[in-house]
Image (cartoon, rainbow, N blue to C red):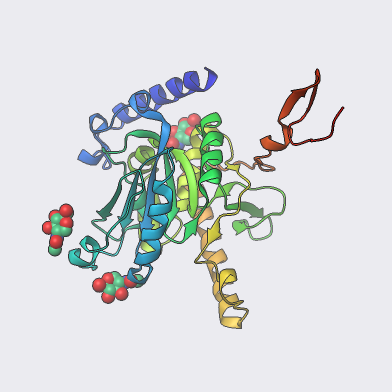
Amino acid sequence: MVTSACWAAFLLVLYCSITYSSSSPYASSLCNRELYAPHWKLRSDQVTILMSGFAERRLPLVRQIARSYSVSPIVHSIYILWGNTSTPWALLNHTDLVSLGAPVYVVRQETTSLNDRFLPRPYIQTRAVLICDDDITIDVDELKFSFQMWKENDRRIVGFFPCSHEYQLQLKTWIYTIHPDRYSIMLTKLMILATEYLYQYTCAVPHGVKEYIDSNMNCEDIAMNFVVANSTNQGPLLVNGKPRDWGDTRNSINDLSSSALSAKKQHRKNRGDCITAFHQLWEGMPLRYSFGKVINSVEEQVFCEKHGSLLPCNDQSEV
Ligand SMILES: *[C@@H]1O[C@H](CO)[C@@H](O)[C@H](O)[C@H]1NC(C)=O
Ligand SMILES: *[C@@H]1O[C@H](CO)[C@@H](O)[C@H](O)[C@H]1NC(C)=O
Ligand SMILES: *[C@@H]1O[C@H](CO)[C@@H](O)[C@H](O)[C@H]1NC(C)=O
């Protein structure tokens, strides 16, 4: 009840701000509100998966991941957002996508812009979207649990890969880091969020944000965290799980060469620069810290009535 009231207020504000700014350069046909079903008309019992793909050599893995998600009854449909604009149609058309339930589609992105992964899409029929990379897998139980957590926190980003922003006093800049006990940014490797934010990202971010992302080819995920945090004034929610990251070098070789380490350092520096730039463009720092994570341990707390008293169901001892 509380959340739907919040959503109603939130959508009203959003609607007003969009009506107000309809003369902005973002008000292209893409931002025509009437193209998209309103939040309350979308399904709340299922999620749409938007998986980004780019590398042709990973197509077999993409197919396998899509198939494994298609089994889950909470998955409405799966869209593989194909970002390599040079890939010939024939190659994609001949990739047979096997579905064991939810339909699987390939959508060719029209440009290579990283912003395009967050385009609002009129065919999305669910209130939530799961955004993921083509090299991450989670099992269907973890998927179900994280979706349940999203339903209870439907204005926040729910995900598995957390990071942090932090201010460096001496340098007066923001840094991008991993903090042991708090987080403020959820990575798009795998996260669930309200479909509504795709529209907000595309049609209502401060001017300059999407341009910054295009010229630096980085940080669309950080910008999405700004969008959500700015509208909720809350941090994301971390779910405990064991997603498998096929792109993570820890899954293959331990690359501790100096070039790999310096590339990592440069990556962090670039991401810190994004935070500093977005801070200026948003004219403030909307990111908020969250602490802890939610764990699916309900099974251990299930009690059964035995001989008139409540005992853990797996407790076989006789009373
Ligand atoms: C993108 O597509 C082109 C054309 O098929 C191909 O040569 C290139 O290797 C692809 N890029 C990746 C990363 O797979
Ligand atoms: C591939 O499929 C798309 C969408 O169904 C279609 O528009 C296109 O003509 C097909 N291309 C080839 C080369 O088969
Ligand atoms: C961020 O949130 C503030 C406070 O609700 C609002 O005034 C502002 O317009 C929002 N900025 C953006 C870019 O959405």
